[in-house]
Image 1 (cartoon, rainbow, N blue to C red):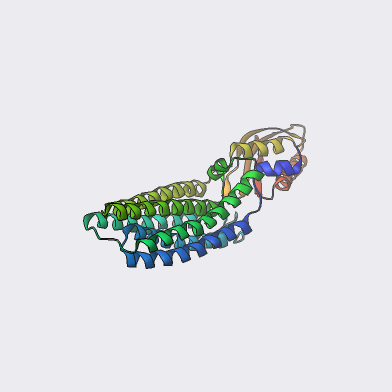
Image 2 (image 1 turned 135 degrees about the vertical axis):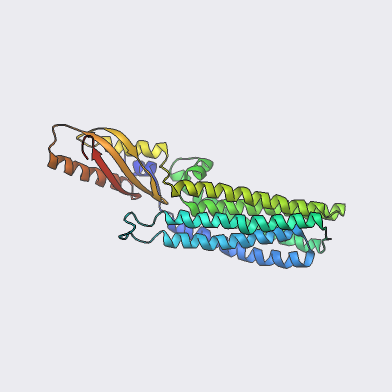
Length: 317
């Protein structure tokens, strides 16, 4: 297998610049949209529009956390963190996902329940429609940037788009894609709720729309929290990645088999290889030591995202 092809299978292509661009675009989009939605929500009295304003504010705060995640994850190893700070982005992304729940979900839910209990009339329908439609396109551009980044990486790894969304180790791109998808859906729900309010004259659809927006945010928050928790706990690379790593190890002269293999992520696109290997009994101690060094070097040469390897010959401690 060619080195380039094998490196693609192992893991990963550099996306730090793409991730930064994705977050910045999402942040700018959310700031503009949040201001517009708040202004219209205050003038119109629409609960659905106010719920969407809370949604955009939550997303804005989340993008700031994601930028912190990008920055903190690049900190070099130190005495207390010998493997580096690669998992820190998952912590900040976890905080961001909780922010979606606390800020967006609860405030939107309260707004919807309040509208159902104490209905208020909505005014300035045209302004609400204009802002929601503009928001749809603005947040759609941010979603398109996130989609392009994820799709590019999926193609390099020969994965389907949704398969890569499930397996990818980048919490930032996943969060932006999920948040923007929820934002697009929320705009549509708000548009329907306000439209039904205008057509029927009843404020109930407006309140129900706010509650639906809250439920969408709750689902996204739960899903992102679950995925970030998995990586904080040390989620392994996919079976394809592990098979590729195993293949590289057993291809080295003097290694007969791999009896145990762990390939956990220690950060976005950062893998650590832990393996128990069966070596040729005819090799001496110095030859085994050289074999282990050469095998680790080969693993790193196949993919720059294999940060290191701990290889232990069977029968040694």
